[in-house]
Image (cartoon, rainbow, N blue to C red):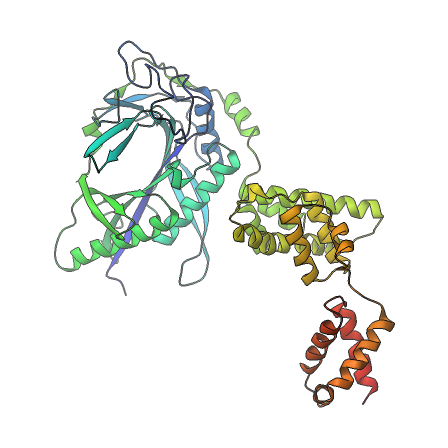
Length: 504
């Protein structure tokens, strides 16, 4: 049993996908602009006499995030100056928010799957969400011993979210960051790509004695966590490091530490600042922000369907299994694609005049989901493509599912059709016809092949008649081989069972 337990709080910075920067009209490149110092002006480089003008879209984005995370939206908010001096902070201060953030207390419900143990649910409280501007970026030329500064990122709208210290493990921290990223993508307020710096996670970690006060430990801030794997590994390392210090009778120092992914360890950066060190005061060049209930309600009505809402609907209306629905909603593009496929299948049923039961429709949708989650994903992965690059239309994918569902082709033939669709596109039915992939369900023809296979394999026939059920599977495989995979395996199984019963 562990002697010390962790208390973890997360701070997450997210670059917002507005067209322009937070306080000027410069293009917001979200850190992707390759030409240094291209998107800059007197405002975002802190030139004397320049005045900031708040970006309304960025403010709306933060309110959307707050509503999605069950936060209290402030009726009045303001911007503040946060004073500190870094080479990549051109003004010598950052316009941020201190005591009146846009969003107050909220929460996010998680499903946590630890590496050991069963999946469980966890609610993590949100302390606040506020809006500020990003800094520039330092570029280090180690070969020449020089450092350059690129101000393209300076002034990009940056949302900061702070959780309550209620996270109890690295698995919970990782699940929180993953679910938050998914929400941001559903809201379309940020791509939130961690590798590109659009979402940056920091963890505040302390340990307390088992049975003691959960908030009694010394907090250490861990930075440079630029992937979900780094979040998990970094927190686990820091928990072990602090536990080792405490168990040896030492004291944990309050500080800011960086995470070195290559070495798999944290390192000291500086002593931890507090709010007094930043000498906050209200930003004199920007008026306070005020929001009416009507304005908040209007933003709320404009929220898209969120991941958990979509998951419930895919289960209740389209009949998907919960695990399948969870995988689909984990990627907004894949979930949208599936719904287009499902709509095509629904139209097909209507056009054919088929009276399908709800269970029948659910079976058809589940078949589409299975192929999408397994086979389509496998092809995309093997070709190094993201889901956005798929070149199979929902109409053609639905056509393939219909061919499989009606047993026009078997699973092996479906793989061939999928490969053709990925390589050259086209119509699935035409590919089936050209490559002669249609299943053979001709009872008379299949019975002749089945009798021939039984004659060639008397031992398997004898084994089946002695009660060995698996023997018939071997015989089915032999029929499939004789027909070069064109036979309908279900029809073959029925024919073989009939012939085997007659031969007793």
